[in-house]
Amino acid sequence: MDNKFPGKDISDEDVKSKFPLVAKKNIAHKSVFKISGVEFGGNTIPIFAGPNMVESRELIFDVAKNVKSIGAHFLRGGAFKPLTFPYRSEKYNETRLDGITWLKEVKKEIGIPIITEIMEEKYLDEIAETADILQIGSRNMQNYPLITACAKSGKPIMLKRHYGASLRDWLGAAEYILVEGNEKVILCERGVSVPHTHRSTSRFLLDLQVVPAAKEMTHLPIIVDPSHATFWRPWVKSMSLASIAAGADGIMLEVHPDPENSAVDPLQPINYQDFKELIKDMDKLAKTLFNKKIINT
Ligand code: PEP
Ligand code: MN
Image (tube, rainbow, N blue to C red):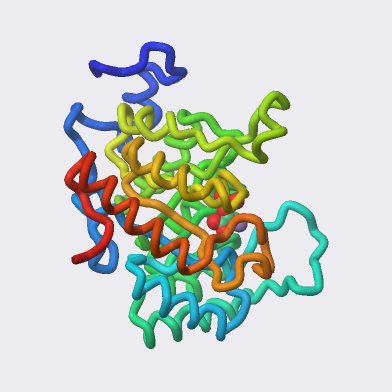
């Protein structure tokens, strides 16, 4: 294929033999599909917004109402959460199937599609009944039995990049979904682990170069999650705008009514007011640069 960065660890042979379904068939090849009425890979840049965790029924209803009226296309929120360490603070209460029930209620009452994480195949039926998109978290990017089971459910899947994974391994994991005949796959960059030279400025490094790099190889839409990548609220706005400029097909943002009191990662969510301003700015930028829109007007 022409116009590819020559230094990649992905050879033309890889493209043909390792991920033929994920690979572009020609330079213009781009997947465009709808999920619950929202178009991906087209002229709208969908926004996923919500708390890190479905902390309570009250919280998820409040967030759903607010982010929907501000312009989010999907409500995000984990009921099943992967935590780096096994210890829980008092505030922290993983709501699991209760959280999934509240997501189901909020979807029905407020009318906003849902993206939520799945960690274990045994909960697939309950989660798939509620979720419009199944989120495979970064830590499960190479959990092939989980990925295959989710793919077979026929539900759209968002595959987060593991923070240590190459583009080659990420596309390989996406191929596991397509090979099951499930074509509604969204890739999500969420920051990569960085060498010690960067540790003083960030926990993760938002790899924005992977957006154009992925687009040279694959027809799948790629979205960016600046909340997890920066881990730091004051940087979320600039990195969201940079993600749009880099060509992201969507943005995932953590939004919480009282960010400092978020039960998980309280340094990263933004509040409703900041979300409102950010969505307007992203819309302006997307219009100016690409004639695409974010706000559905
Ligand atoms: C999340 O989106 O809630 C999450 C846990 O993200 P990641 O898998 O990227 O850490
Ligand atoms: Mn998180």
